[in-house]
Image (tube, rainbow over all chains, first blue to last red; front, side):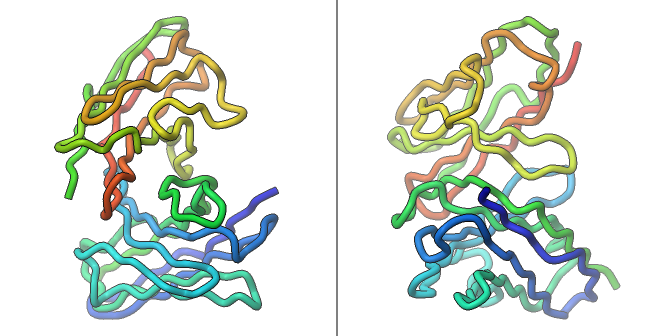
Length: 122
Length: 107
């Protein structure tokens, strides 16, 4: 079955960077865009951006432009999301979420990874 | 950015009840709207896309409707497994945006 397995929880100091991974299996890696969505504990969902698995091209939310970088490794079917200059307000659960539609950006998500908690604290 | 506003924020209901959650967009999103269910400590799970298309495997008691700026999610007969938080999401325009969520509680 389709599975997205994310890396483990991280604790970072303000100003540091974090790089999260999301390893995909059970489907053709190159056929589905991958999105990243974050959720501050107890709050709503915020879309961060999307990456094409084939070309590596990305679209980011303007709010995070300049601080976020999404990449992928086709040899290991793994997606990465790096966030720089971390702030306490970046404390959140970060999800990778596969696009539901094949070969196009449908922009709705199924399935999701299990999430990675990133805590930013001095 | 398109703002998505859900109401109510919290809904108390009983097993067997029919409930409706509303989602309003600050501008038209056509029918590019999805609904997700999220349980504590878990990732969201897609229920409905394109406003009214039910994802395969989702029980038929879930129904989505609406277009443009006004959408609803209706659960026809609540089951114990349905108590969760529900989010709407527009995907008409980047950035994709979500509603703030509706927590469905047991009365």
